[in-house]
Image 1: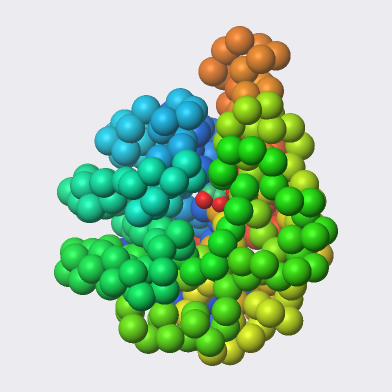
Image 2: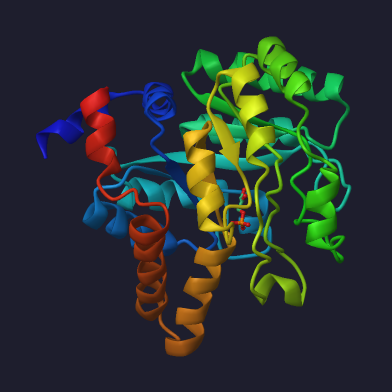
Length: 311
Ligand code: 13P
């Protein structure tokens, strides 16, 4: 469709600004296994939906994404510039096991490979240190036209070992992003999008929990509204799998522009693999789950056309 050529020509920054203004959700699907790229893009074409494909360190080290280069190569084969962009998810300064990470090298690798956006995750650092690393990444990435996402607050769930009971976490608001700090963070870093904690948690990536159904999270929408009113940039919801639908839809009306979805599409792919023992069988179950998400859950069928019209 000719109008989609506008999306092909637009920068990711422009697309995300339109999505933010118009409250059009841009999902970011984690690639935990390389053949997921082709499966995801096929469904995006069918549904005329714009989305990011993203890959994080755990997708590479714990599952089958192999490397940032391998995902880029797969993306180059199957990605569609009218409907997709490629994002480097979670480059932590301190990882989920408390180990220091050579984050500069990983970000540099994605910039060299031509990723369209990167995420520096300094959320386990002090506020001042988080500002410092995010600013440093921004200065480098922006020169290349690459968008930067950062995180403020604690989106738990990737750590090994049991989480405190979810309802306790939610009621206490422990780890929630402070709206005032978020405003200061955005001003001082020049970050493009901010990942926040308002009740969302990541699906597990280790032990038996990684195969279990994720807890159905809720979101504190009032808290989100405060963050949104003080920041004025696209906000990102990590831990997208399994959040109750009514909360997700309300969050989209209140500043959430990007939602990261990992666990449930990985589990769909793995289920298909177990049942069929073939990549085609795994992709089939993945595609089915994606259609449900895009059409019934987020209601973003045709989002690419709506974005293109507003560009
Ligand atoms: P889920 O695995 O809970 O969907 O979270 C994905 C995510 O936030 C990746 O950054």
